[in-house]
Length: 240
Figure: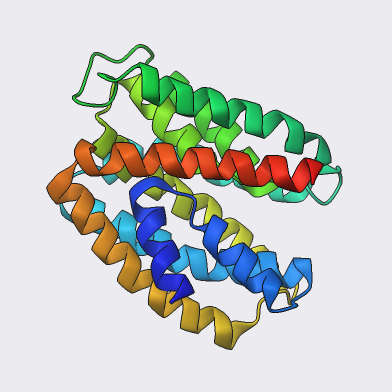
């Protein structure tokens, strides 16, 4: 049930880790095992959602291949860096950025309702955001789907539906890097992770189908709610 709920939320607005990580921690698992198991099961959900968006024509893999390659490189660097540097300082910075995203989506109501003229070329867009957000997801992670969605809307002029589809492709790319490294380190409980993965696949399929049918009217309120909840959770972790 945890995997299904997380897969549904994640395929629409990101933030499935808000559900899965607290549940895994509540079971008394060590933090490294929680993160490894979470990345493993999340990879199935992000793949299912990404594959559906590609199948429905929301995402063109040929158009996204540069972003996939640079996100992969960024995620590798971020996963390496998190083993060298204390990411604690991000606990203060990230909630501020997420709150700014929530305000942006609330106040700039026309944004994401339809496609607009790109403000930056694809080469430079993926060169900056592929490396940066790929690195961030490998290094820390919370809110990366929100950052990607707003980047696609503001930078390339995507609609919110199209931005959601491309976001899941980039999420899967960075997820699979972390998943492989956690597996290599022995930090994945494979059987529970596979059970959660089954739920993720079902939830992601349902959620991505709703996005294709309902579009912005479904995504916007869930997106804003997830961003605000992520912000509050990070602030709670930092100060409580």
